[in-house]
Length: 196
Figure 1 (cartoon, rainbow, N blue to C red):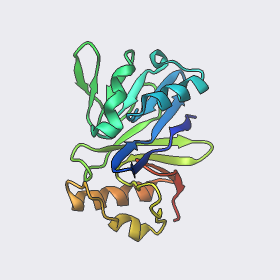
Figure 2: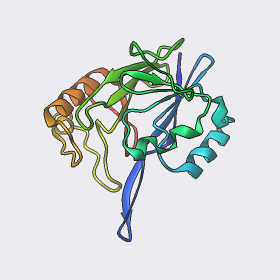
Figure 3: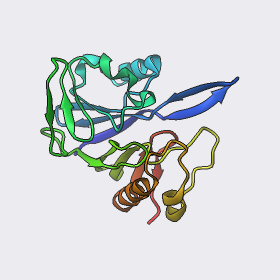
């Protein structure tokens, strides 16, 4: 079964009038595949945490971007051996683009379309032994630092997102991930157990 490790807990804060943010960065290891979801934009923190896991950037086989906002995707280019997945396509560093069927090759990792925050947003479903079904939700759900992290499902579905592109689609995406997940890794904020 795949193993999952939160390398960076996503954060979003303001310090002395300057915004500071980077997304949650998750490592999934499934068989021989090393997968990074949302490399974020804090290079030092990411590289330091890869070293702690005994990995180098060239050890990463796949990178999944939940969406292309730079706080989630800026560092994608440091993984020069990886194939890069978004909600529908696979990109190679030789300029090739192909489509995918919602799965990472030779793994049980699924990519689920979850539009709303961004029209091309996706989330990642990983079945783990330790946590059950984990959804890496990107910005389907996220919090600023210090903000109360709601646990009530109805309030989570209706939660305001100041960057939403399609509010109706976002609510449907939230319902979908909350229905499936045992745990959710939000784009910014701590991982949490879904209360059913």
